[in-house]
Length: 197
Image 1 (cartoon, rainbow, N blue to C red):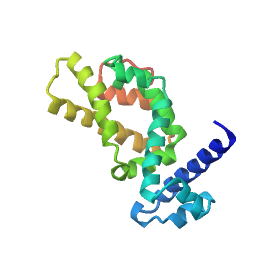
Image 2 (image 1 turned 60 degrees about the vertical axis):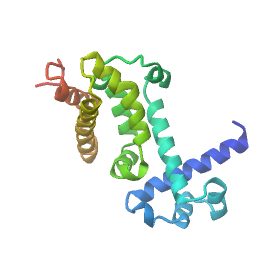
Image 3 (image 1 turned 90 degrees about the vertical axis):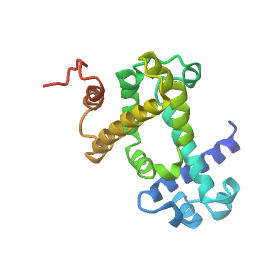
Image 4 (image 1 turned 135 degrees about the horizontal axis):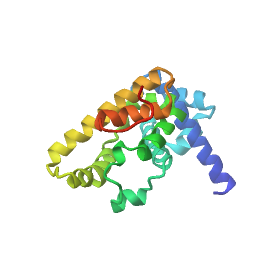
């Protein structure tokens, strides 16, 4: 990346961050280009050099957040595509600890993201994980009905999100190992953990 490309990229990141900051207190429909420019310390013409609308910025912000999330742990995208995941990846420290580390590092933005999940439109991301991970993992356990697998995925993800949001709302005071083991125990009560009293 040359100097000019780096500057363009860094300006985009500033506007991504500005949008996430504004979403803490405002609905996307009430956020103006002027507010984003003030928060990012860029001028209006710079905004329109990058985006046609606030919604285009929103889509880029989502894509960057998802990319950062996927890059934050050791499970590579090639493994997702080749379906080489261990069937227990959803309920193992191998998956959960890097995920929780990402949440801790980005807790403020993660909360904004979850609170505004509808506008971020993560359906394609969910569908990709569902097809490439959930279906093959469930089939290894003899569950083949897609409708049941979909409910199982949503049950697991909703429960995990509830724990994580509670953790964030408590300013992440409990350590990552404790939260990891708690999530695993919810799904696998036979899990042996060092954090039990």
